[in-house]
Amino acid sequence: MRLRNKVALITGGNSGIGLATAKVFIDEGAKVVITGRNPETLAAAEKALGAGVLALKVDVTDTTATEKALAEATEKVGKFDIVFANAGIGGATPLGDTSPEQFNRIIGTNLTAVFFTVQSALPHLNDGASVILNGSVHAVLGAPAWTAYAATKAAVRAMTRNMASELAPRGIRVNQVTPGGTKTPIWSPMAQTEDAMSALEARLGGMSPLGRMSEADEIAKAALYLASDDSTNVTGIEITVDGGMTSAPSGAKIFRTA
View 1 (cartoon, rainbow, N blue to C red):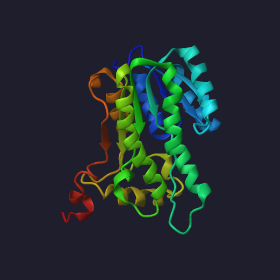
View 2 (cartoon, one colour):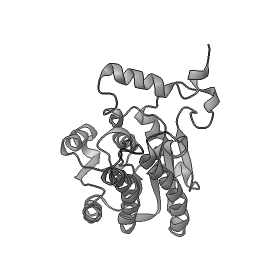
View 3 (tube, rainbow, N blue to C red):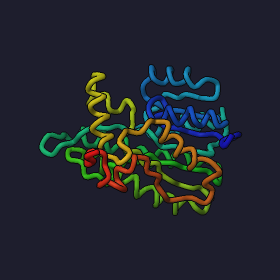
View 4 (cartoon, one colour):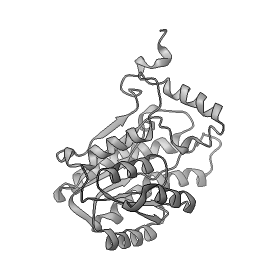
């Protein structure tokens, strides 16, 4: 088991990539603390994950509550060896039709809260620990109407490198997983029926050479590498899991004739 005797914190661990990562980490021997805002999905995640998990209802945008929750968690399960700052939200912010409240909600959740999650965890983090931030290919795509979301993920990309430098004296590694289109509940507002979701999967999958969306556990397995001792001399990097969409866009399935 690659995470035996390790303790991991996963924000937004109640669904999507966070939940898939919690499952992988527990299977690899870790004790896992998950946080989430939705009590129903948090309870469902706790039941699905079993005895290896501690579930905490926390809004990551509330720094005081986050600090308190992490302190309480370490009293119960010990100091953290892994922090996966995964919690985030989507949402379009088109020019001419976006309020400051919409814009700031995305910035506050996807950028500010990521910084303060790591800061809140630091007093409870073992030297030599692994910090993983969740990015997105939106940092480089230039997708119209997604400015706020893309800006947060571009900032997280920079933050990964800054934090890697700052925490290196403690031997703490900071890296990033960068998902492309991934099958998670984040798409539900844009594809509310089975047919709409199938069409979305075909469209997004067709933008990559491998021709499909990622599964959540494929992102989780990239996070596992960064969390484990397999990557003890790896810091300041991102692992992109997007079927080649950003690295080889000319090979996208939509361009193929056969």
